[in-house]
Length: 199
Image (tube, rainbow, N blue to C red):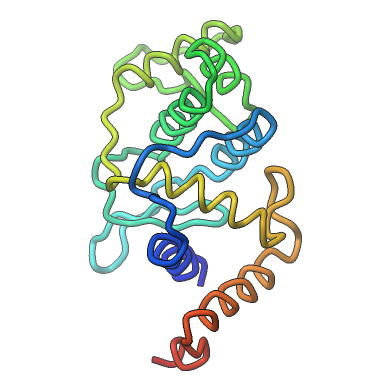
């Protein structure tokens, strides 16, 4: 249901609101920007075993995505890049964005041992982690569709407007509220939600 609602929201927003989701990233106010970053980084999707059809699936707490062959073990790097890009578009300096993201408790930075001798990783300080974020921002090649980052900003705002997310966290009954919001959106477009689900 979540993926269908997310798609429906995006199409509804692009067709009916007049706001150009595929254009520039909408700037966020300072408090809103931090909440967006925390929301985005709290739901990292990790690679799951391939299904019977051999498709690559990534699953988080509230999201599932598939077919993203450019990703490895998770979509963390893509989310870091998106968070930093949105923060900079909202007026933050690159250094501010990198430090704030590096300090996020949901991230696991610098823990990969690929190509390195096996040994216990040493604790890293904040500025060292910020350098890792800066390297991601400068080198990562974003493979998402045009307007993907803008769409995430509008999705976050829509979730908050409908009481599904408070601050940066999903409310306990977020599933019910999301379904109700999706039904309202369909009804405004003259579509019967029940017929759509049955179809």
